[in-house]
Image (cartoon, rainbow, N blue to C red; front, side):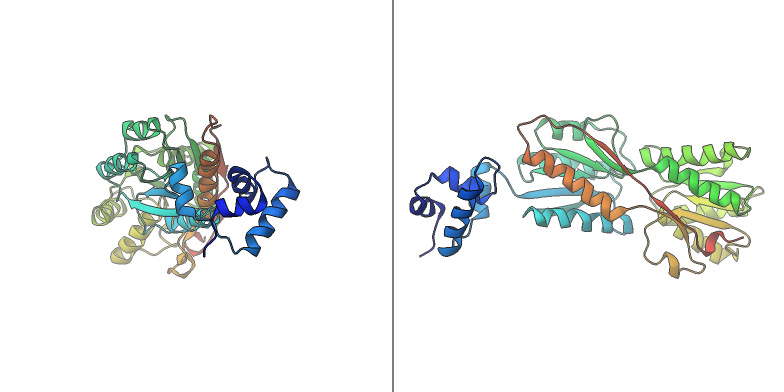
Length: 336
């Protein structure tokens, strides 16, 4: 016969709530009582029923992760960090892909209001220019933590890297390796990461007394073929750059494809650097210089912050902006 918590409490001559708190290692219960309860639970082969516990607390034991894409290695690594923390907490993770589409993001936010998940980790789509759907989700009592692509206008915790510093470092690296005309490939006009990386790029140009040229700040799209055409026009125009700073790894790969097609030698004729967590960066020909984000740690920090809210739901949370440092990894694509 299986032993339930009521039977365990009767054996110990304790209340069910005391036994439950002792098994959860609550600070409200003395160490001697915890030891006594856990020893009896082991002796009777008692195992807690997580589903019954979830129902009593009206918890789904599930969190949602809303991301724009999965092909970007940053998000793959961040999800690994999120799942590491979720598994420690005995939670399931549901992944929602927006494919950089704000309408999908709005649809997911509406879907997640019905108690399907206990909290949401989200990285915004490149097209997101309105946050009403996320404000409504938050007002429904669903905790939200942003990571990487964040929203500064909502009171939520943000887990990011220092995008301004990364943009500055990438551009300075190109300048120090001989580049005189550096183009910036912008991912989105809405995302804070794009804006901050561009600000870093402009600050580096200013430091080295290099002219800011609007024609070298290139707005890209979510379509790979269109991006390759945009980059091709840039590299065949009358004032082509000798360096490119790509704000996202898919834009760096587009540069490589265009250079291969146009017979442009990297790094002799064009130097390229990118924000990227691509594991194959060192295997590209030439190997790609990168600003590498601590993606796994960003995922872990985001999940840790969300569970702080979930475990103290009755307390007004203290919102945090946690910034982790990225790393410049110089490789073949920027060699002198």
